[in-house]
Length: 296
Image (tube, rainbow, N blue to C red; front, side, top):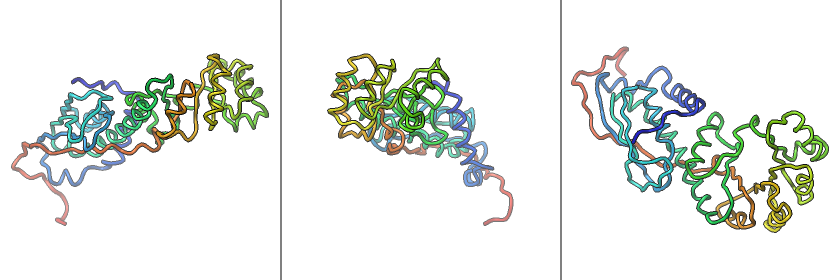
């Protein structure tokens, strides 16, 4: 399968930073043991059942270390995989495979963990109108990585950052003095952007509707209040449920009729998906690598 390596520049930057952090001045263990011209083959294996995401990111890690690495897979992004299943075959310069291994697996494990948890939420609301959204509660420096994983798990992205949508929350409203004042200031400053407001009560919902706001967040409202908000809005604005959503509660929230359910846990609490790299074979030179310094 041909992998799409046209990754977002922020993801490529994250890979470069991760490699710089891990490799530093060089992989002293691999470089002391593995001859420069040795080649090897290995496989990346799923150690659990779940949804795979980030094979193209793992591929990019290997290619950044050495463009001669060959990375092949028959597994599609977002596919469900079984424990013990081979996710990819990797071959090429042995030093590159061993040096890139941990960074590649870190990205693949994190992204697959996010995708697996996201799919559980998506499956839980199947048959309702609700869309599962992520939040900005991502790992620092990995915003685009985490949000790509959510999409591959079947969820959708909320705003990417503070720049691409106006989201007026409780502290903004309190500072402005009223919901109306906050909305008016935001429209004057960024008339080209959509606006969402956080509603803490049904009165806030009514005021947001009167102001023509097209997206309203129902923050930590009860199921009854959310259902009433759905009746009140009657399709005139998009309603998003938010706050302490879990796998145990998400179905009941979806059944109130809200359009979106945003869940911070998708990216801040997803367990890492267990993957490993297994050695298959090598073609090593009989000549040991050169060493410098005193034996330890």
